[in-house]
Amino acid sequence: MLKQNMTDYLNEFIQQNPSDIKLYQEEKAYAIKHNLLPDSTEVVVEDTTSRFDTAYLERCEKETIALIIVETPMFLKEKIDHLKTHSREFLYVESPFFNRLGVDALSMEVDDVFGTYTALFGLKMKKKYEDALKDYLNEHLTDERGKFSVAFSGEDGLWNMNLAVNYIEGFHEDMTLLDAYELVYSFIFQMVATIEETT
Image (cartoon, rainbow, N blue to C red; front, side, top):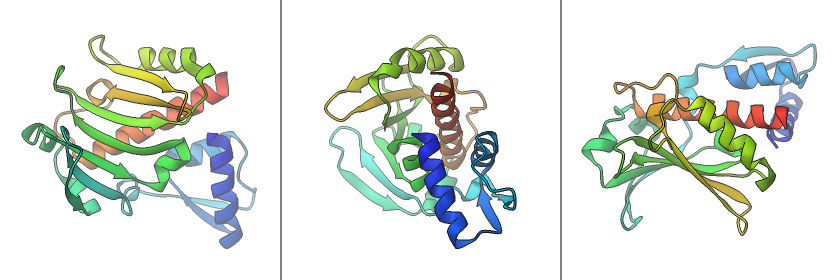
């Protein structure tokens, strides 16, 4: 899925601009590893701070899922502890970059039980990858308590995922929401790529 989505994206981009292409570091490394770029293509590495410049954001109430306010991407410059000081809220973000990973959108909130920052999303991946998915999460999330929960929905054909962001390597309490979303994006990208390559 990731390989096909990346191939489609790159082919479309190259048709419009065959001489150079702008990619983020993960996408560039993936494209090179899988020989998805023509030899003549120059790759310009984008600064990750721009990845969510066109994202759609909503702040919503946890209990009712009611919309509080639609925010601009500038809101992502807030510190992640906004989610602790507004613990009855969650932040919902849509981005075309998530779509390439097979993720519809990604919400972030503070878990009421464990007090961790939690990323919630649906991941389009076949049920047969269950063992590989859980093995990856167990290996790459650093704590034992409440680090993730996953459940497959046959009706939707996707995994409902909850990941404790605190246990992803690189997390720190001083990061911004943008940093946290970038960290989670990178984690999901590497997870999907690894599972597709090794199963």
